Image: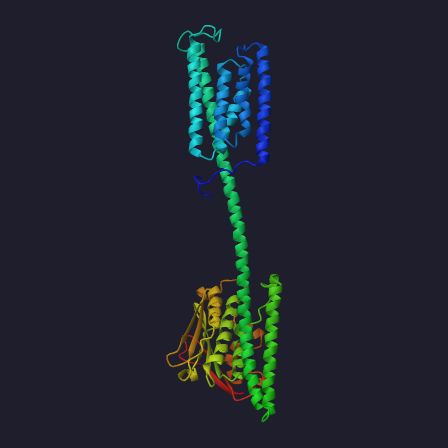
Amino acid sequence: MTDQAEWSRPAPDAQGLRADAGLAVLLAFAALMTALLYARTGMYPSTASAWVWAVGLGLATLPLAFRRRYPVPVAVAVSVGFFICGQFGVPEILIINISLFCALYTVGAWERRRALAVWSRLGIGVAMIGWLVISLIVSSSQEDAFPGISRSGIFSAFATFAVIQIITNLLYFGGAYFFGERSWRAARVQALLAAQGRELELERQTSAAQAVALDRIAIARELHDVVAHHVSVMGIQAAAARRLLSRDPDRAASALEVVEQSANAAVTELRALLGTLRDPGNEGSAPTTVGVAHLPTLVAESQSSGTPTTFIVAGDPRPVPMLVDVALYRVVQEALTNVRKHAGRGAVAEVRLRFTPDAIEVEVSDDGVRQQLTPRHTGSGLGLRGMRERIGAVGGTVTAERRERGGFLVRARVPTPNGVPADTGARSGVPATAEREGSDLEALSATAGSATLLPESARASGPVTVDVVFTSPSSTGSSRSTERPA
């Protein structure tokens, strides 16, 4: 469709063919009437018989009924009719000129074989002008032809008349050629625009389908992160409650309380997620329920599930873009879930939140106590794929690999040029969001000795510890570390 040589104008429909037939009949009737009127005036004395009139006027007009179906044969037929009328004295010069012009125009506008269209019009034009020149030469030697027009001298009145006739015919055939080509190009451009419109509509439908598919993937990823995290905690606490139910009911009740809290947290997050999906218009204005400010709570939940976890913040906290905030939180959540599922009993995890001048990083590692005995189960790989897709969507990278000294390491890094978030929807970073949730990391840094990150039920469930360490880029080590028995 995009190549002119490959495009051909579609044939006219039934309505167009009926219009051509009506035009041909109308021109035939008009040609007969004007011929009779010309004969009546005596300006063009007729010497032709009635059948010459019929053949000449019929060939000059009636074939136009098929002009768009057979452009070149119709143009040839009309040219023959025009020649008969002019050569044998049929007194009509108005309608047959209109008919010939229409026929030549149609060749340029509708003939699909473009080379044939060019050569046929050129041949008809040369033949007609040649006939005109021969007629003028013959008339120049006949005294009764064009009486009253002087033939004396090079620039006689007759010579001037001949030049005018030739110029008029050149303009006549040139105009038919030009407007025919213009009509063909206009039809081609219109067809191209229509084809592009269809392609754009198809692309729009494809994009809509892809957007729906991407939304489904995003929903599945959110559900995977929320459900996997909370269900893993609930499973571990439920197993502990079952074992302690007969010999230590109080600790079993505490474990069940953690199960209840995890279930409530899961339901709350799922409701927030579904609420955003049901009302997309509030997506930009509704506050996101999770972010890096909630990492202490996430670490506490990991502690309550029996995985000793250290939380370290390095660098000076600063505002975090909203999408980056959620993505980093989800990476830590999924990584801790994988630690509980695959690292084995007794494994110790470490969560690092690092602020550098040009990036924000989170790092989750474990020592993989059972790595030497049982290889880590590979799983479906959807968790790591989801991490990479999340961080990739905000321009970051994810590294997931085994550690040389045993265990597994997951690191997510999101560049922040000049340390300033790019989007205006950036939420306040760790300090502000932590303050909003009542767990300001700067306050924890100043009062680390009294930091309490575990819920009461979790602290009563067993001897777990939370290490909160704050460092800065200029310091050589941790500024403070606290261990609080639960």
